[in-house]
Image 1 (spheres, rainbow, N blue to C red):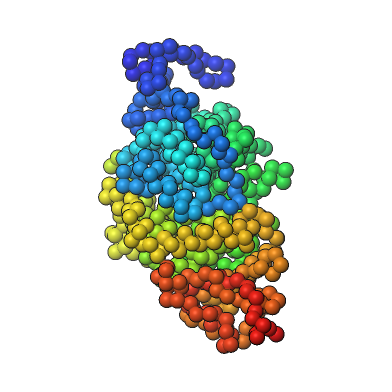
Image 2: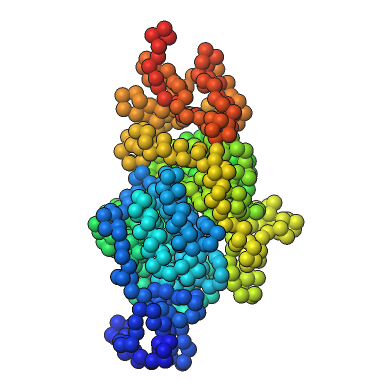
Length: 597
């Protein structure tokens, strides 16, 4: 039925769908479906819900948008630096148009791919987006579908790719009309943390699979997106021979041709088969989030290893192993879960693992939604940032991280009173896995997810790019090193040798990584998360310079430009003196004739 009052009868098709022609419908026309029994509902495949998920659907003509990116060829995974952002809090207005104004600054910083948190229509005035209920309708809170397209078009003009975080494991609790159209959209056998699993392999699952695959291709086709980030894939349950993730990846790439797209998965069990090629029994995705790197980094930065940080010590060996082998858990016992975790992935291309020290979940999982700079020392954070941005994995920053944003990132969701109470209680229960946060005095301090003030507190102040210039310059310079230094650009391209990097422990809190280049053009990255260290003697061959060379400092996290205290030569007649809470990158220079051996 159209908003104008016209009623169009739909005819049943053999496939189980219903169809009909509405001659009076035009771009901008609003409509709903009248179901058996008289209930009305929005279109499950609506392209726009201008009044939210319970309102009328609106006819949209995607072909009318005038794209200017005809020469854009998409993005491939090597050499990328990902930037996770939430449109509602990225700027004060919280719109696509306002976010678009910041794109030149992001490009100048050195990020290359924007990862947008979910935008599928969800209820309320604000939310993270993971409770989306209409997969095809970009949230009206951020602007129109064409505003989204303009954002992507502008990003492409600046050399920035755009991928979208999508949720194919559940739908939100408010505004989900799919069961009213067909209960077979959901499994009666399998549950997830959010309710019944989506039916990808049971009776009548064919149309459900089609719905999911069509959505993935829709973002690629109609919004020119450069790929997807797939939320919590461990709760996408499919026992069929052609797993829905593999089928979706295959079709999305086909629709993107000749453009390239990247498909990134969150997968808590660290199942490497997701990024294995189909001919090796994999699903053909490109990358997985590496929670192991984040967890060991946070233990080293904060000194706390409770709850899901239990199985990490933040030691130098953990960082060396992470740089060399990716996941730290590839099948060993994980005492927090009382079972083995991970699968073997020693042969993975380093680019296939996305590394980070901040993301939306992990910031919000602290007591006050605080960012890393509030939880550790400035020196330690500078050193850890250098490790993440120069290591072989694909690094990811969370919005505002590049300038040390003072705003927190809290969990926020706008629901009706009953559901809001459940969300508030559920959030407190989740945080109670941390013993300190389970105490009554801490539970009383948690921000209310449903309070508009909680949402408003999370909005970025982009003027901090200047007022926090030291932190911004640190990120910008490291990303320039990663991009322009042949040693690091080679490893980003995946062209590095299988054993192109090695490492050694220097003390309980210090380590060295050696990146092997051509003709002895190596680099040393020395990281010390403890107190000042005097390495004498130094019986570690990775510290030895190439023939007829000596090490000189190329870059240091203690540069006064970044708020540091200066860096004297690390290697001298007194052997190695390494400052505490610091990282330094060393390069080989020809040894003067007077000092040649």
